[in-house]
Length: 254
Image (cartoon, rainbow, N blue to C red; front, side, top):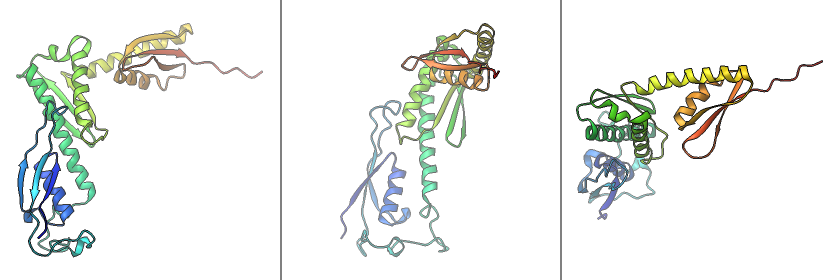
């Protein structure tokens, strides 16, 4: 009789899927006890505990590790009219499931933070491939944004850390409140164009100020096709000074 085996994952469903694949037993044939449902911790950052199950392998026909997967007693081919379609998923589908779980963690965290500050606010979620956007509307929008957007920026940093710690995937996360980020981006683009024109006319570099990585990226993209100026981030840390320099003119041939 095969010994019981323990499997761990971020959720019971995920642990069952892992056990099913490793043991070669369809999920609806697995016999297991739930040891722990796990815990999401504080905002998904600390105190996270994995879900645990104890699987009881069948008493007959033990499964050898070196036995071909298709020869295992509970394997059903895709051509079997009674095949378990969920059991026969490929790795791409598994990755999709993991991404959905990551999206769920991000959404849960945003809702916890917003509800703690402004429970009457509503949150709209948009997902596209490896990007998830949260737009908060109503409620205490001024408090959620904070002075010069500092509270909103802190919320985004926390959500990004919680999402990316799960499996290291570079999921792009955007948290916006009442379209604040869109308006800010438009203002930054106008500022970049105004400073670029001044640098071009005077021939001297100018500073746009200290900015976070997201704001610097907006400026860089806004001026990347400008043939008269170039941009450069100066300094260390998350906040760096963004400089605009005039481009050197190539010498004219005699």
